[in-house]
Length: 107
Image 1 (spheres, rainbow, N blue to C red):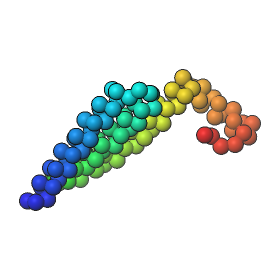
Image 2: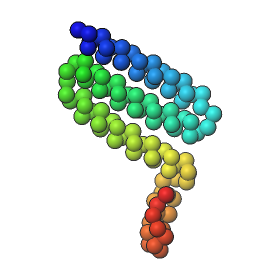
Image 3: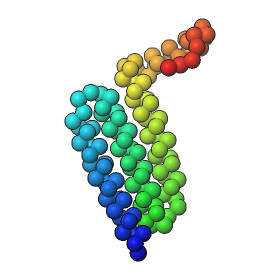
Image 4: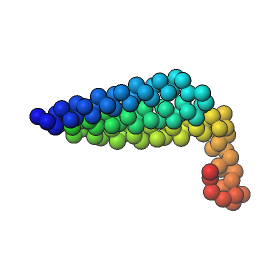
């Protein structure tokens, strides 16, 4: 019974942290602050999913949380690449050109 209350307190704390990340997302002065807040919100969502899985005893929620973690990571990298080059195609073309001429590793 005590573990149920602890898990509920953790879920509430994560929900408060998610609300703080949303406020940072809308108030962030720079693009990178907003991307960081979005990524942090995604991480907190994963934590909330895992706490939900522990509370309900469903193991399938862990798989969903892992999938969401992968999507969150790839989306963050894609957003940062897009805003750096203003196009994903330019970034991919530059990587191909660097590899073709032996320019070294990608950033």
